[in-house]
Length: 87
Image 1 (spheres, helix red, strand yellow):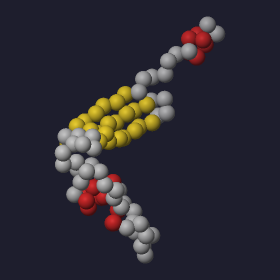
Image 2: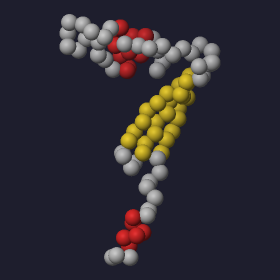
Image 3: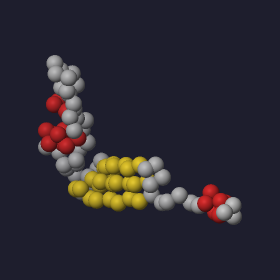
């Protein structure tokens, strides 16, 4: 039993997995899964010189504050839909 302990202690952790999906010319979606955490990272890689591609800030409902408690809150999907964005 003690002979197995060093082998278990010095095992390398499982490798992170990732995949990428092109969304549009100059825009790539990347998902990375790190089983050690476990962590899942979602990101977009943007080529700023790609024709027809713009990066602009957005706010849900186009505001930060308002009378209702949820005013100025929303999902990324809602913000993309409001702006007519692809991502």
